[in-house]
Image 1 (tube, rainbow, N blue to C red):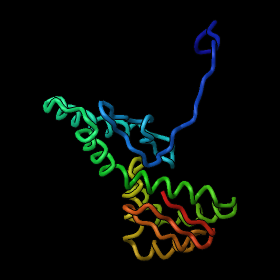
Image 2: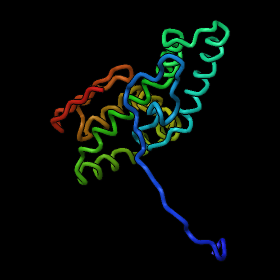
Image 3: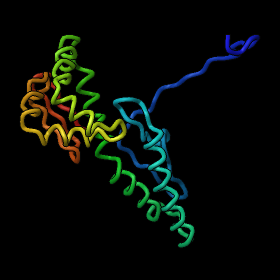
Image 4: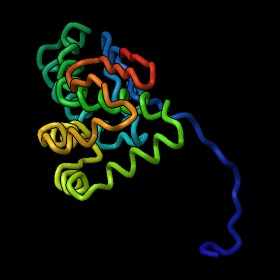
Length: 178
């Protein structure tokens, strides 16, 4: 083995706190990363999101210290900043995750076949960003041919807007609001 004589002392684990909109500040407190669910629902990743949140928290903390005002009213700009930068992509990921969780194996297979079309793969390669799915979504929407192909997906009547908090799919009989 890699470490001769080593043995496992204990195992631990926990749930990944997927994104859900919630207040991330109070008097004297700013929550960052997993503590405020800055985690992508599509992958469970959150390092980049936490770093962006930390940048906004640090900037807000400096202003609060300079003003000697760590009140919730002052710290509100932290929440506004990170949600402005990340909220759309986090909401989009959550809505897509919820819709995808409802697909049958056959629907997943069909969806993957459509996503493997050369023109779709090209857009994915050029505009796909694991941390910002909205970039890919916008790229797919901007190509009329691709969007027509993707409209054959099991959730073809999806009404999805990165700034919205709603996703509707008549094919799956679901409607989500975040």
